[in-house]
Image: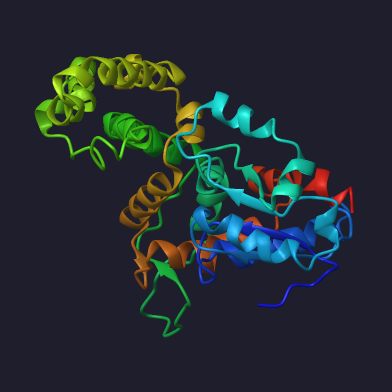
Length: 320
């Protein structure tokens, strides 16, 4: 693979065929055109998983003049990372990353890029309201139409999102705990919880600690339990998990939009939309994202997602 000496390289998690990759490229070009980003040549490369970032970066460092000044950039998911861990990574200097041949990881300010879409409920409603109602009597075939003519609002979509998060709060908490369960030396991963493991915080704690009891010798069990109990408490304290698990109706929707899994939430929102307006032809989630929604969103340079991209790249584009 050939790399240009006079380009800033931005790596990103995802496959080249993923719909967001060309969308991000177009957005960066438009930000440059509107002088919201300096006129720097760049290339955005989808590299699959984040574990491939540094191996790709070493190839780029070997040829690039720009990346003698700034590290290779890599946009990646925040996932369930704790704020203190993000701050610790920020403490590594750009010069050190260049010297070591490593990327500067730029974490989305939310769980993943789809979380920013959850803030666009009003725009989604407007897009769906503009889709023509199917009328077989006209003989005119629309590219896309809907059977039901109900008028949607952003508030209605927010209500659906709240209902989704309310019904899935325990699953979100469990996913956060799974993310922080890293101990291949004891057992590879947590087993899927049974229904009785999800009844309350105490049951969930027992499920989280069970691999220690099951796989450690008695002399190592106590120390490992202390470590995992501390890890559990750290996760519990990062958000208001205990209150939300005990009383799902108390969930803070805005925090859920930021910290919970955005892709799953947006996909469920799309399914609910499709149920309500009954799209013709039936679209998959990825088709809706690619063919309808992202094309409309990129007309709104002031939206949160595009401005997030700008804020991540601007400090580095200004150096070149």
